[in-house]
Each structure stands twice: as structure tokens, then as C-alpha cells.
Amino acid sequence: MPGIPATLLLEERAELAMNAVVNLADPDLDGLPFFSADLLADPAELRHGDWDYGSSHGRLTDACVLARRMTGAAWWAPAEKAYKKTLLDLLGPDGLTWRRTHPRGHWEATAGLIDQRATLLALTTWFQDDGDEQVRAAADRLVGALHRIAVKERDVWYYPASEYTRDGWPSAHAVQLHLAPDPASFCGRLIMPLLRWHRLTGNAQALELCGWFARLITEYSGVFADDGSFNAALAYRSGHFHTRLGTLDGLAKYAVHTGDHALTAYVRRSFDWALARCTAYGWTPGDLAGQRFEHETCSLVDLIGIGTTLAGAGHTRYWAVVERFLRGHLTTSQLTDVDWVRSAPDREGDEPGWVTRHRVGERVRGAFAGYGAPNDYVNDAVLGRGHTADVQACCVGSGVRGLFTGWAAAVTGDERLVRVNLLLNRGSSFVDVHSHLPHEGRVDLHVRRDCAELRMRVPDWAGHAHLLVARGGHTARGGEPGMWAPDGTLRFPAPRAGERITVTFPLAERVTEETAAGRSYRVRWRGDDVIGIEPEGRTRPMYTARTVEPHAPLREHALHVPAEEWSW
Image (cartoon, rainbow, N blue to C red):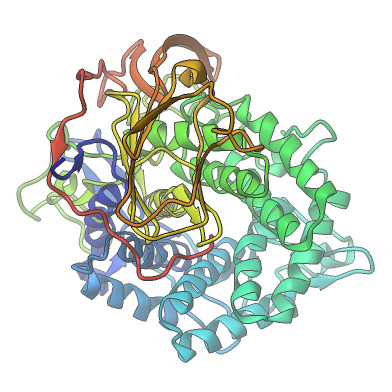
């Protein structure tokens, strides 16, 4: 069989996204990235904003490294080098990352807590990639600064404002009254990168901050109610999904790291509550109030992170959630076509250093939805805030992280036990997975190295009684004894290098009614893929009627096999 099935390939999507990562950079401001794009404007516009600094540089640097690990490509190396340089330049002598004033901007040169999170995330990924001691020193200083500026009470540690200033916290009164506005935004979301840094380097201050912030969130903050619901109060950003889910992502990983099963149960309650407010294919509301009509890719990536963590810890039903989200809204809301975007052919209408209208569509090709509708890349609803932005730099970088998270989790294990968790095309040192979905219910496993056992997850809808396994000239049916492992996966004992195993099963089609922000959508499924949605979108429709073939088309392509798998 030549090549691989011409079906979804996450590494290919990551390389496509790097077009937007690279071209967000503004040459008028020494490569500072534009933050947002309005693709409905005529001509379309890229604009700067107060998130251009630590937040955007952190997200985009992280994306550069992760995409390189996924693809083996490095054509964006000059942009990666420039983003890394500015990421370090933004760090002050005190260890924190600082925004810069802008003559057209409304923000001040402060150290925002959200910026610290993105910067530490990038420094961790960067150091894990190449072990640069300069990066290690920078991240240690940043963690030390976060530890130093935290207000430390007997029962909780917290940050009393969204931004730290050159003179300290803006209000001593807030400290004295123990005020901690939106702890999820300022403390909870830091847990994940802090824990990653601790696991990578053993930094004790990072782990200590994780413990205190976890206690703040779960015991004192009121961010999450006993039933798992999000606090919808205005002071809690109206239950803002990205900050809530980013906090749960950190808590899920911290629970696994510490073996805290009660904390895992806490995360699962809120995760399940959140899933019930999203669509089954991965559209997420922005919050529980005025932004509830707007999907942020960042929120979906948080869900994928939580799902892979819980599934990897034994709550295996979440693998199905992760696969639907990867096949659904993460990749479907990536901008692969830009012929509908009206861009200026030159820079005559630009406002240098603030707005550009030149080649905007071409520049953002590969971007993930910043604020999208359930059926459209563009959210132009008459409700809520209406149309705001279509691309955000944070969602571009975060989308790559979501692809990497799914790609890294698709095949896991070692010579004792290798698991195929997601039925997506994926190359690995032990087995290459060739997925014919959604055209056929067929997965080919090409064994590259001997191992004691190989297991493959089979979707619940696959009709196990009709499943067939072709191996070594013998075909077995799904109902035969000994084919299944106790965890419900297909079991293949002692696979050997060069062996080919083919699994086939019926592909179920169904129709569901999905509710998103109070509106109903009729969704047609083929397995875990959406092949149509009604009503269709208007501006840049997604989930338009998808054609499936009796057999998956093939193409010549070599799956990338990383030299080293990262435990994610």
C-alpha cells in the first residue's frame, strides 16, 4: 500500500499554523506580533493590543518549539529566534516579564499575571527542547519573583490584582483586606506551567506555589461550586471559560503528580459540568454572560489538556471526548481558506506600528478561531458583544499546543506496553497508525519495534461484534475470547517489527441536536467526525456537507517519528 490515508494529520495542521505564527510579526515594531484581526473589515485589519508582549510572545514561542517537535520542520527558525529574543528582553531585573508602553496604547508598563503564565510556559518548553542554561536561569528567576510577590496568609497565598507595578501591588488596601479578585485568572492558571517547571528541573518554589494555589482555588475561592459549576459572578469574569478550564488543567495535572484522588474527583465534577455547556464537537462558550456566544480556541485546548490528563490517569472514557474535539472544532476552526477575506494589496492604508491592512488574509492563513460561532469561523451574532475579533494571537499559539497535546497522546507507552489511544494518523518509534476514518472504519497498525503488548482503543459506537482483526494471515472477530484487555481495549500480544495489523469495524452514522448558547444545531456524524451541520454558517461556514468515499484516498507521505517522545 503506497503512502498513507489522506485523512487528518495533526502535524500537517501544525505546520500550516506556523504561517500565521510567523506572519503576525510586525516589522515596524521589530517583530512585535499583532494581537487581533478583523476579517470582516474592508479591507481586513491586523491590530496591536495590550497582549502583544509576554502573553503573545509566550504563546508563539511555545508554538514554534512544539510545531518543530511534531513535524521535524524548521523553516520558521528566523521567526522563532526573534520571538525568543524578545521574550527574554521583556524580562526585567526582578525576574518578571513587563509590558511596554505604546504611543497609541491605553496600557501601562506593568507585569500582568496572565503574561507571567504564558512566559513561563514558553521558557519551560524552550528549556525542555534544548537545555539552554540561560533559559533555565530566566525561568528560575521568574518563579522566584512569583513566589516573592505572592501575598502569604496563614491559609492561602494569592495575588491581589491582575498586574504588579514597579512600586509593588497597586493597592496596599487590597492586601490588608485579603482581596483576591478572580483567583482562577491570576493564580489557578499558573499551576500548569509551574508544575511543568518543577517536574523538569525540580524547582521547589514552583511546586510550593502549586500547592498553595490549589488550596486557594479548591477551599477558599468559590471559583467552582460543589456541583462543579463555574461561579458566574461578574467579579469572577462571569464564569470565563478559558481561565476556569486553564485552572482545571493545572489542577488535573497536579492531582496526578501528587496522587490526590479527591482532587481528581473535584476536577472531574467541573470538567463534566463544562462539557455539558459545550457541543459534542468542541465549540465552547466564552463565559456565562455576554461572551457566551463566542468560542475561544484557548478554551478548547484547555479541555483537550484536561481530557488527556484524566484519560491517561485511567479515566479512559475521556479519550472519546479528546478525539471528537481534535477531529471537530480544533481542526475545523483552523483557517485553511482565505479567499473570502478582502485584503489591501499594499501598505498605503496602514497605520505603521498600530494597524496593517496589507495581505491580512494571506498572513493569517492557518490561524485558529479567536471568537467563533458554532458553525462559522466568524461570530457575527446580534446577541452578546456582537462581532469583535476573528483572530487572536493567543488562540493561534494555543491551537498549536492543542494539536501537540493530541499528537503526543495518540500513541503512548514503552517496550512493555504500547497504547494507541486516538485513531489518528501518527508515527512513533513502536508503531505507525494509519487511520482511514471517516471514509472507512479501518485502522492499520504498522509495527516498527518489538514490544511485549500493543493495545488499541476502539470507539464505543464501533460495533464490537462486527469488528475484525487481520493479523499474520488470520482474521479474528471481535467476539472471540482473549482479544480484549481488562481496560476494554483491543489486545495484541507480542507484536514484532515489520508486522501489519488491520482492524476494521462498522462506521456508525447518527444525528444529534446540539445546543450552543441557547441555539439549536442539527449535527450529522460519521463516527467521531461531523459531516454536516444545520443551519450552516454565513461568512466562513464550517461543517458544510462533507463528502466521504467508499475507501479512503491515499497519498505519498512519511509520518514524522520524533527522536524522543515528550511526556505531556
